[in-house]
Image (cartoon, rainbow, N blue to C red; front, side, top):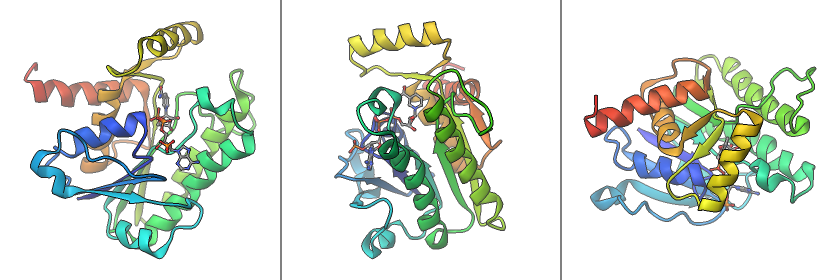
Length: 240
Ligand SMILES: NC(=O)c1ccc[n+]([C@@H]2O[C@H](COP(=O)([O-])OP(=O)(O)OC[C@H]3O[C@@H](n4cnc5c(N)ncnc54)[C@H](OP(=O)(O)O)[C@@H]3O)[C@@H](O)[C@H]2O)c1
């Protein structure tokens, strides 16, 4: 399958690329980002599967970018501004990157993709789809992420089966390469706020499994990501 990883330069995407490049079901791996993405170090002879595609405007895909995305079977969408960075820019800009770019992305890819096209949107545990609610934590962000989740699901529902969509709602994502200061901050925040945790290797494995094998459900909660990811990773290491 031809798999697009959007936001390919990010923390989660780096692990998704590392795992996907070794997955025999993935025959073409497109790393889509606003700058060049390096081929994963573990690629070896699979490097021929990898293509870095730079998109200068995520609200208006050039013909050249569309040509390179054409025929994709699936996309894992990881473009966003995380809460730790969101405070440093106006909310309108954060909304444009998180919500508008996702809407434009699925709309640009769907007509040129293989059918059915699987689109997995990575959000967060606090995304609130019910826009009448008033989340107690980062309300604007939570409602905006929830609206994006709903937009993606609505797009698929209106596609006559040509697009299948799902959402991942992880809590705090930890990983081996996270600097120790950030790792401590993440532990404190997840404990104080009561956020569930998932390893970056687990969420990457779970999302790849979902787009390769088909969606079990339209919403993967943190516990689903840990369960599916752990199963895949334990099978690989022979510990089950
Ligand atoms: N990290 C966590 O603990 C955590 C927890 C829960 C949910 N999530 C969710 O998981 C997803 C991935 O998170 P992450 O930690 O991997 O984030 P990240 O490392 O900050 O990566 C975000 C990606 O979005 C791209 N991006 C940001 N601003 C952009 C812009 N203006 N135009 C185009 N691309 C832009 C970044 O490109 P550049 O590299 O060029 O900046 C990068 O490729 C997000 O939806 C996030 O909310 C993360």
